[in-house]
Length: 107
Length: 121
Image (cartoon, rainbow over all chains, first blue to last red; front, side, top):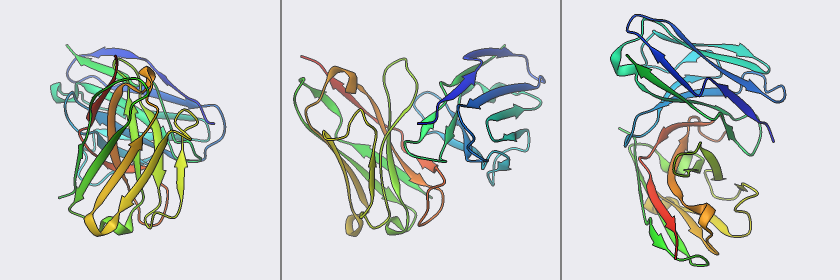
């Protein structure tokens, strides 16, 4: 089973900031990582697929990087609407596993 | 527009059973694998089970194998999760999710809003 270690668990940002969220895998999983955003009471939104590919319709302020074991979600020019819970998922092997999640607060 | 609507959650006693449903619309349901994912209160996400587009292949987390059964009825565009021998640690919001690509496993693109299952006496 692949463990994903996501950090930080919580972060606070100011509008206009750039933030990075890390996801580290316990073994090489190529680029088989997706990133999602979830707001309370809402369905999760698909942001980044295959580690680096922006999902159509998602703001280009979001980007993903990494390969193998280290992955990063970057949000540029933070806006108030970005306040949410962000998580990574690996689909390289079953069971699918998730990072522990990052709660992003906007000041 | 893709929509996934879960139902069937509720309060059940330890040892009891519950069947969750996920009604899908806005895409060709029979062409995509589906998953169930859960999130206990205040905790992270846990993948529970997945089923191939035709239903012939299923996968389970070790924590539910032998107690939960995933199935689908493509003629009704509906995904199911039969949960037996429920335990307190099964208490969670349960989400259904659609695979991003047909006939393959690349992770979900669309998720439902979830249904709460509470196991308590």
